[in-house]
Length: 633
Image (cartoon, rainbow, N blue to C red):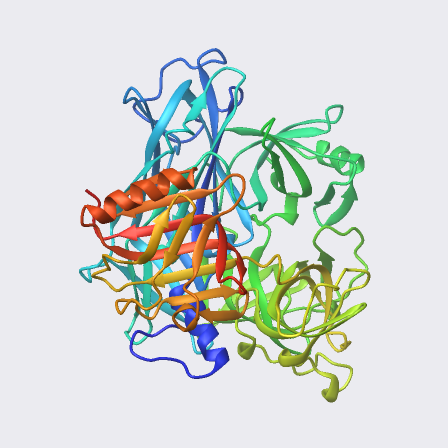
């Protein structure tokens, strides 16, 4: 992890330092406001501002979801206490019925719906989110080992209750009206607001939370919604659930209709189905049966359509304890999972910093996410694979074991990041930078090959790509691959790739910091066409890189100062100060306001931007830019 008091020397060390301390995760809250029907609050409590009578003529339903972008916090668990929205006339409504405990780091690839609250029609122009850090559990990786971290403020005091104000772009208010859905996304940008020091015990992360709000999402992610079954409509190819997010046991956060298709993959009580057969099987389940659906939201209609559905005992519940994480080593039928989330039958969940032993055997039911059939054996589970294991947990002298010998293991898509070594039709070789965000050094690949000589080599990791197009991949360029690890003892190849993201599609992230005091001259120029960073500014601190996957570019070494220009189409640009953020969808308006702030004496402290980087012109074409100022007048 990144240390304020030391600098890495190797390329791998430099990548690790940048990812750990300088490009911490971006957390987001996704809020969708849809037409009335089914919402009704439905939880253990209601906001005092909620009207006594709310019907389809005067109210709408607010869907609230949470997500987290890629980063190096292994866990980041805080309590989301409240999320209020405010109308132009000052009226305030609460959208979360009760406090919800969330580990944001476990939502890297997902957006989780957490509520479906009913709110009155009208224009909502701002809001406030309250986070409670008093019982926060935060973990970072230091030398391959998970270590506890404390989130503190700029004065070195642990954070407690934190209220963050959010203001919407004047052009894009959230408008709720009969038959007219609306949409809002809140982006909690840790990259712009965290500095991590691993030399302290515990590790400290200095935070000044930075939230950006927009009515249109910039990044598309798979959505997840979970909760007990209410009803099934086979004729409409849909079912209704009471939204029950994260690991709540009894709360009801409103209702949501889940659409299905002929291709929707179901797993119900461990048995696979597809399409109408799966929905018919779901219809045989009793009301209250736990469900989880993964899919997408159609923005025009605000309909949620499921690609995969799990139900019954295929969902964490009272029958099994559940372990979620990546296998780091295997010895026979004993597998080791490091830095895992353990969900107990009681519904409690915790990030386990120590290793957990996972036991499997011939009677373990093994499935792959989104695939029918149960013909996989326990040998399908190899080193690096991300798994959900269902079984019985026990503890002996402080060491945890989850026995799934008569349980189940579901294999999830595993995400690789690295640099291309070779790319030939059907085969891609990577120098791995990470497996699901974890450094390759923590994985013991012994036994993964047909012989010791063919065990997986993280510096030459062989991926079968089938008919996937590799034409744009060049040696040394960054790439990401999604897929499944080859069964244990069967490599090479080491991995079965399902999706390959080449260097032209791997988003570049620029991060620069000017120290705690900031700088009054961060740019050589700033106008409606873009901004040019002064890469000779002596106030630039340790954060001064462009990351493109595992590749880092030091902006202070660029012969041409880096330029940030807005991308065509919709963008998101934000100016933040402690507890307040202004958001713009128009770059010219953003640049004008930022110029005013700097001219009035505000100083730039941090900047992050994401988009596509052209090394030839030293230009980042950005879809989003966030800048933190020391003060805003």
